[in-house]
Amino acid sequence: MKLVKKLSLVAVAAAFVISSAGVGSTAQAAGSISGKITINGSTALLPLSLQAAKEFQRLNPKVKIAASGKGSVTGPQAVNKGIADIGACDWDASTDVPGFKAFSGQVANKVAVIPFATVVNKSVGVDNLTTDQLKGIFSGKITNWKDVGGANADIVVITRAFGSGTRVNYQAKALAGGDITKKDKNYKEVGSSGDMKTAVSTTPNSIGYIDLVYVSGGDLKAVSFNGVAPTADNVVKGTYKVWSYGYYMTKGQPTGATKAFIDYVQSKKFQDSSLKKLKFIPISSMK
Amino acid sequence: MSTHVNDLARGEAPKLKEPVNRSGWNRAARVRFTNKLFKSYFLFSILALCLVLALVIFFIGKTALLTFRDISFAQFFLSFDWTPEEGKFGAASFIINTLSLTLLTMVFAVPISVGLAILIAEIAPKWLKSFIRPVLDLLVGIPSIVYGYLGLTVLIPIIRNLSGENLGDGLLAASIVLTIMILPTISRISDDAITAVPKKYREAAYALGSTRLQVIFRVVLPAAMRGIAAAVILGMTRAIGETMAVVMVIGNTAQLAKSFFTPTSVLTSNIVMQISNVEFDSTWNYALHMMAFLLLIISFGLIMLIRFISRRGGHTA
Image 1 (cartoon, chains in turn green, yellow):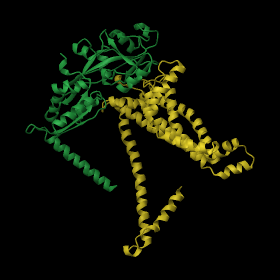
Image 2: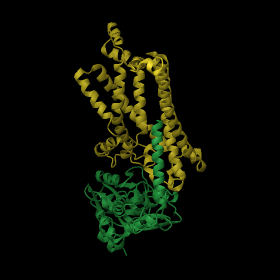
Image 3: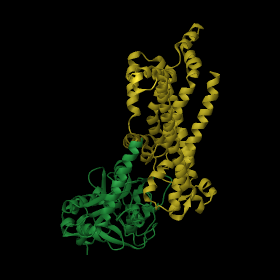
Image 4: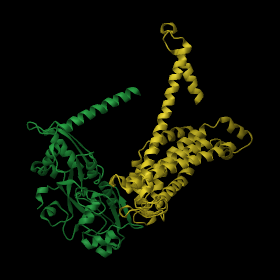
């Protein structure tokens, strides 16, 4: 037991020395950057962070990047507490959004465009929904598909739990700030995008919303929003409105290795290749 | 069991190879030293465990009690309105749902699993026993997320078809998944308890002219009562604390379950759904900790209750 304690103490001490040395020497020296970057927050942006970290560390072997994902709001919180250098968040956390106050003193750095889609189970015969229809459905005023041009069947609403970044953005963009009201029946909350996909795929007559990248395969389909199909092209053209930027929140303007990393993520090289491969949309394509 | 351990320890002491004289220690001193060493090691083990338990209670409790800085005791325990975004933190529906889910699960699980245990231990032929026991052992080891996924993809559509509901999520689905999950645990441990009943009890009962049914219900089951109660405790604590399997089939909506099919939420599922989306220093976070603390207290309470019952039942056997 004592030996284990000693060993772990040594390990902790070593980690401490290494990390403090890393933080101490974030200055750029002779073109090579060194330092330690911790990324925390949104799971939606995690694949992007991991891919960027891999590439950035190959170019700058002296930089150590640790990325993890939990929930959008944990990103800016971790930055506030000094636990993380970068807080990945699905909304601009330096401003107020429904349910969450602005994090003062933080800077939002755009890194990607995330499109969202309204999805329905394959059994639903509806292919287009308007803002008003969606507002009616999610607030519980419209409960039958026949009221929005479908068959005579109850609408089953599937939604993300309050606090989800996807929900914040969907409410703001697709529902124009409208409410999502819980009901006694035909209503269910799920905890992640993966669960949303499973739930909508397996529940007949269900409706939900999800990151566009998840809409492939399964027994679900994306419906058009105000007559516009949810595709990356339509987002770029500016006709499909349900999308948001993904942000890297930092405490004040980023410096040192953190700045270099964010610059790399925003660079044309990364945005046009790896980011596109991960099915995000480059920020430069938005005007 | 304990006598076995003692025998083993005593049996091993003389096996130490070192000659007594070379070490300068006599045998008695060495034995005394080893005994002391092991005594303190065991003491340390149990203390470490107690320390962990104390720390869990202390830290969860400390954060949990901060809840009552902002909201009243009465609101948390008596209000059914859980709307964190509007500052309403009534946990009554979660508490009642947790209790009713556990009760429903036990109503399903206990008769079936004890019946299964009787079958394996008393009735089944040898080849069937040696088939069912390993199968049950395998089932115990399946991760709960697998049960949850099966519940979502297999059980829910069945419930939907049979009940005519659109969704099917709710207490019934959750309790069936939990029943399947804890069934092997309860029946395997009950099986051990029943098998451990001395053969002479049965022989004596048969000699007095009992039928097989009488032997099982009047002699074997009462004698194995404590073991079965322990099995039920284990199953129940697993059911109460189960999160992943429940989250997938219960519907996760903060409201009281008015029927078997109301999409609803229990303490565990609500914590796991919301904890990653709350701010650290918020009443919401404290309230979730309070729910975890409550879960701890409920499961302690239930364990105490069943221990109490089984002790009283044990004497009449």
